[in-house]
Image (cartoon, rainbow, N blue to C red; front, side, top):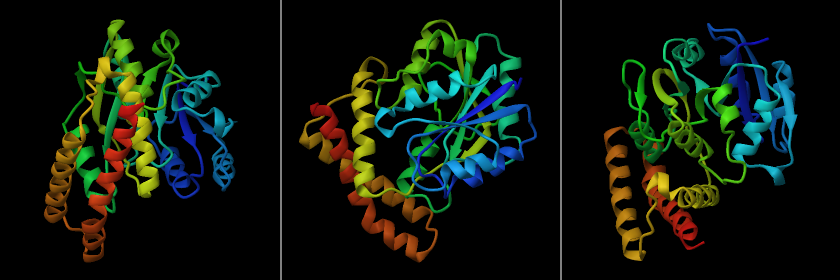
Length: 285
């Protein structure tokens, strides 16, 4: 029986899944199984998962929530430690998994550990800024008190999950709610900055709008945890201006190449419109 179960949620991930699975197979820690929960892929995602001997669980896209998919995968797993990684994440080196699971042997009442996420070089300036703020480059593991956790690169005890499975009705942020609940039950959450994955997106404006709509809809439901605030039109405009300026500052500091610079100069304001439009729609529901 494997000690660790790696659970990956997928839908049309044929471009990124082979890279993710290939790096997983190269890990120094090898006592694991791989479970892929697919929600209606129409590309070669499932075929790729089979190539890597993953256990495949298929669910209807209409049933999908992040919590439901993860719970289904865990129920079919055997490991005492569950590792969740996004299909478009890429472990940076072969000790990603070793660092992620090691702390469970040395810290009592530790329910979960999440690792660091860094952007791909081609990532958007605003995503680079957001990841730097959320996942600091510390030198070693430490415990955190706030409800901060990520199922894009995280591990947790089956024991803690059995006490409180992920919320299957929540549209987003199932990991934040789970973290808050287990912390209140006396468990601890840790951050392991040495367990690093690349993680960033290239999304259409439509995708950005929908993502921030469902994210902020969930944050509104979790307002007692996240301090979700509803702002007026003037507040949204000020946030848009501030965000665009900060994104431009980062873009000017770290230009990748001329084409990248020109593209994001024009796209950043539109992206921020989509972000706050999704936020605004969520606030009105």
